[in-house]
Amino acid sequence: MIKKIALSSVVLSSLMLVSCDNDDNNNAAVTPASTNVQIRFDAVGPNGFAPVLFATHTGDFDFFDTGSAATAQLEPMAELGDVSQIAGLLKSTDNSVQTTGPLAPGGNATLTLTVDAANRYFSYAGMLLPSSDAFVGNNNPISIDLQTLIANSNGNPIVIEVNRVYDAGTEVNDFLTAPGGGLVGAPAGVATAGVTEGANITLISPTHFAGYANQGTFNGSSLDSAAGASVGRITITVLP
Image (cartoon, rainbow, N blue to C red; front, side, top):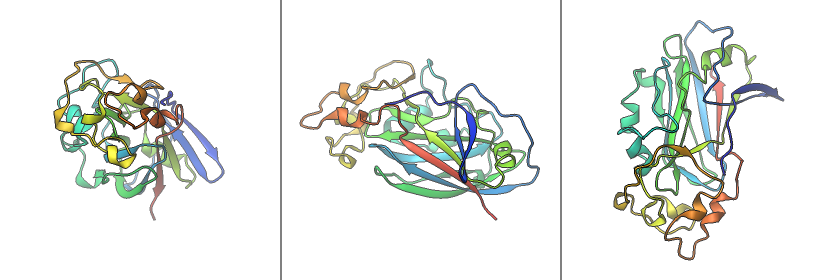
């Protein structure tokens, strides 16, 4: 399902299209003033989402690293959809940290953030549903320099395709312990009953859901039908 996310800026029609890689960082003109932006998040694939955290920050919000064990703050987000502990790692002001509600497939949410010299970098984090411990997020805290992107956008919306999903490695993949199954017709999971896996964070494979235990009559591979495509889309618009 998941493919590499590369950070680039491509102006397509009225949109500034951006996707975020874990290695890149933009260095260009910077807007000096505080700016309010509207963040719209769309669940565009066959999956839903638990609450998704969005934040602008100083650049030190490095909440996970691929190939390493999940932190104590990441685990409840990846398994239960609880972003409160991840949010506690941020040093941003209240208007620079916002959270959506849960989203069914095809759903969307809109919120507002502030971008300024102190909080110029952009990050997001949220649990993919249904799953035992799959999540989305950018693992390089400075890969999305939102202040610079705004300065170079010519007033066009900035679009980030979310097509990189991770397995936290904290829990064995089992639909009976995967919250959100009812969103897609999967068995109803009890998240607190999961079995510890003890693995490191990895990108999920194109057949991630086909390998889940306790699929019953549900075809878990149907959640893999968007292999290589986006599971979410972030659209960022500067407010007047």
